[in-house]
Length: 432
Ligand SMILES: NC(=O)N[C@@H](CC(=O)O)C(=O)O
Ligand SMILES: [Zn+2]
Image (cartoon, protein in one colour):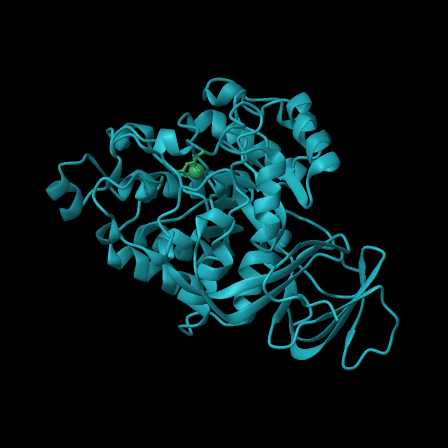
């Protein structure tokens, strides 16, 4: 199978190329990039007016498989990813049961290999059952292919245990993905602690819940030499502390999710649990700091924290409903609309944060790049296409998003994974 993508704006952070040209894919690899490639191809795609980027990579998704497959499963999640322009996702281990052993890593791997249209990677939990008491079989899971460890959904509150996990991660050269939340400071909070939470009479979550653990984890990473990656940063403090750590030359990185750079707690529609996620929507000051941190590359990654829940579960009250919103099918459009179209990020930075840096941090050889020899994982995006987000078209089982009905600019036209077209927009046919 060979594909020739003609006349797109090819944006490749790896080779720093940003120009209108053609891209050739053969037998699952990128084989050529240049102007007016004269070659036979099984499929020719006309990408005029579109960005052609390395397939997007999402370092933070919840696929709910095993155990809660009414919310999502490996296959529905992977289809949603393909529709969102993603060719690789990393699933978090807070499933039921928790992915804390080589066998459970294999379960996801086998299911994905047989049935998922894109690459699905699995992160291993840090402690058995995410109970925070004893370490999981981290080395066993590394032998079975996990690219990272994470206790996502919570923090490992025992710093001594966490330090041991970091030492293992450092020894094996894999990153530690840190969900930063001090369990003893949360205090039953369900939204950000501010005048909005107080007027709604809801228990609030203070910024220190996140910042205290970010600071602790950075000190532990400094001590152990582990690569620390901060998940879903939401506060101004996270940006300030991360920037300081980088100034000291530390190997630490951080991600921001589209909802945190788009919305604030002031946008919450009272009682609408599609605005409830963890960490919560913060203040305008926090959002500005996140945007600035993305612009200045303090945060090198945009991830979705795709967290599907069923409509029934989300009909509960703000206090009782589960935390989390879906993100795979809205992330590229929100990034384009909120950050690229506004001049905060260049298209190149978008490709860096949504593909190149995730590949680099997770050590995914041959991904996040359009250089010849790389895997033929490519996304074609029309940055000018305007439309309203409509959850009826979502491939995800989860429809829990605060962005339903939002007008956005930027649409995935095609997703190619391993040299195969795994998603194509129905309105505009690129095939010539
Ligand atoms: N982010 C969320 O609000 N929820 C996530 C957990 C997490 O990513 O921390 C989930 O698993 O539902
Ligand atoms: Zn988390």
